[in-house]
Image (cartoon, rainbow, N blue to C red; front, side):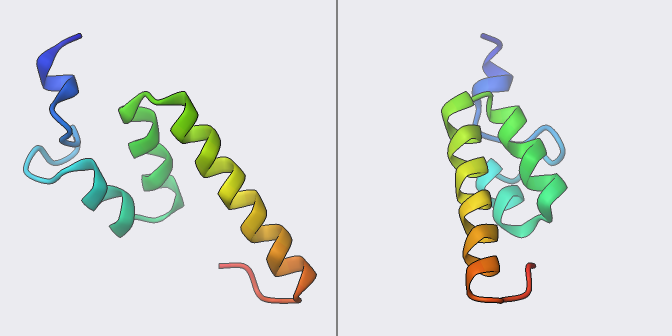
Length: 65
């Protein structure tokens, strides 16, 4: 693996870790960060969490984000 890809830093802004991009960004940014990390289990976990949030919002009649 190329060391620059495994640095823990986003290619969008090499000064900030993936975590900063993930928590600051919108849904599209989060998906891009997950894609850049290249961890399929993390992507699956995020999708599951996202689906559970929508189900809970539907059950309790809460507006989705």
